[in-house]
Length: 73
Image 1 (cartoon, helix red, strand yellow):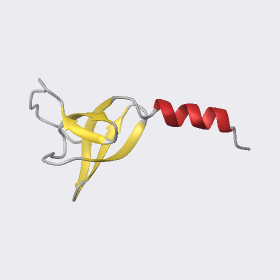
Image 2: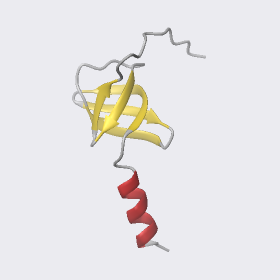
Image 3: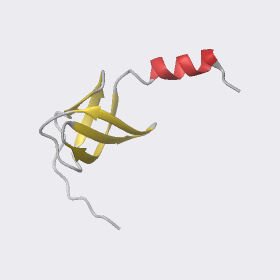
Image 4: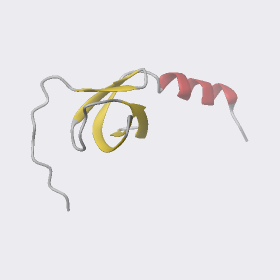
């Protein structure tokens, strides 16, 4: 059963600013892992592992983010 008001609220709230880490880059589409889940947004000049801020569907490299080593397990 659909709850239109709840769905609309979630959609509007998700358009705010989120931060996360780039997990995949395909052309101009960037996948970013955030607290709310994985988002597909546009972006350029980004690499996997970089910390980004997502605003209005565009990923931008986070200012002041130091390049740290990632360890995959």
